[in-house]
Image (cartoon, rainbow, N blue to C red):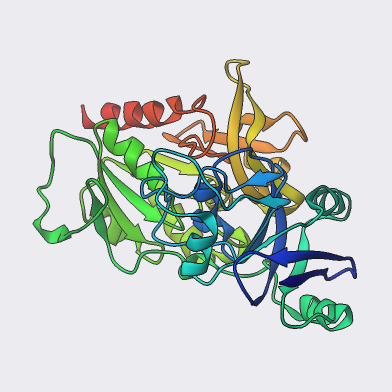
Length: 372
């Protein structure tokens, strides 16, 4: 089934759908990971985006029941060079095409993904439309131009949880009023801006009790569970649109240790008075080099973001701790006067290397200090 990909700047590409008919708009981005497509598909940070994989062969290990990073697929469409329907993996239970079709997500292949990636790198991430129904390039370009894009949009409310929950082997119902004031385990209040489950898995494996709150929870609501620390998750959309969340987080600074990841980094950046801006094409993949300025150590990291914190806008109390070695952008900072730190990348991996898991131990250490 023929498909047309049309960018808002007029560039078009042809391919074929391997999931059936459909039409969808979104920002087109690329991911450089060789594996991990299931985790990518279910990462809420991709809400409103269509993902092109730079690795040419996708689908060969199928889909399993264990690697979902949320309860559903969040990408608007999935674009690959060559889709492999015959999968081989001892954990696999279905094909990638079946998985996409089950949630109405368009999958496109037989596309020159190298050309798409090069176009995005040169021209920047931009709005696009993919269709198997409307095959008029002029019509699709017009639709792409008229689509909403990401700038100025609060997509966090579209992916956050509706009510607080706890975490065991998965999400569990929770009555906050029944929680004991303190337990032997450090309790973490998690602000769900579009979190990935592996963040909760790692915190739990390292001995923490997690209480997950919707993005719209107030500071008082989060503190009502008597936490030892606050964790700010990743999430989609434009961080500058999250004024309410930023205000709540600002009021939490100075009360407890805070650790932010990805969008959490951008929220904290604004909460301390900084600004964010849109990157030309973002960082998405499992092989991004980051330098820890405090130790000089180089970490290979998993990343997925299209916005960054402006280093020059941060106050004197904020010290940049990590930078991206490809473009020098801020990959993390800390406050000198408070137990608050954050990184722009994904130390929970899923997919990707485990170089940065130590950051969870650092957070747990800060909580232990406050419990003494």
